[in-house]
Length: 249
Image 1 (cartoon, rainbow, N blue to C red):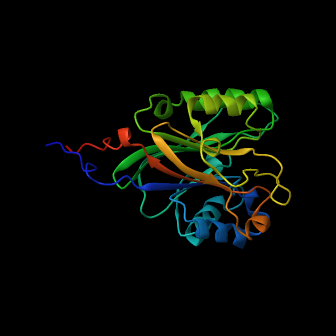
Image 2: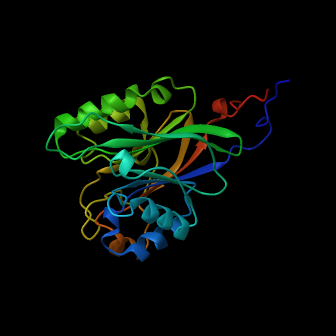
């Protein structure tokens, strides 16, 4: 027997947060305060703890922020996915990107998630400091089967380490929508936190998502929490995607 449990259910808002937390080396309590105040459904974290007791530290960060760990951490380089309790995880895995000797190993924290009967694929990324590596890693990211096949809408978020005019950023924005570019709310500069002058952190969303707004949360704690400012996007699946739902067997 088949059915469509999402038919007739209003599409929920998806609150997604991208945040480079600088390995919690600044003010950990401020990081927790920011996440708890913003209340994301999915948090895409970069520079998560990845050394001594990294699993415990990632789990404790999630718990203190009222979320849980989906995947990531050291096994994905330094990226992490956290989810709110109302989000269901269908699958999760870490993807290692090609390694260049002498440079930090990069990866992707990847998961299939479900919110109120709607599914998406989410990926947390942190691109490197070397331009050619960034572009190569974007190509590898877009070739990941769960992303390339496009069965479910995709959200990619993270620290791109270049501005929107850069080639890696442009490549992502050709495939997906730069959420802040679509629906900006306030200033969008994310680096540095104390004197924000450049936008190097972004949220890229499948065209099946409507971007309601994208902003840098204006909270006192963000100046203490990290050297990056967080980015929050509020999304809703567009009307033509609302009929998509998991099929019951």
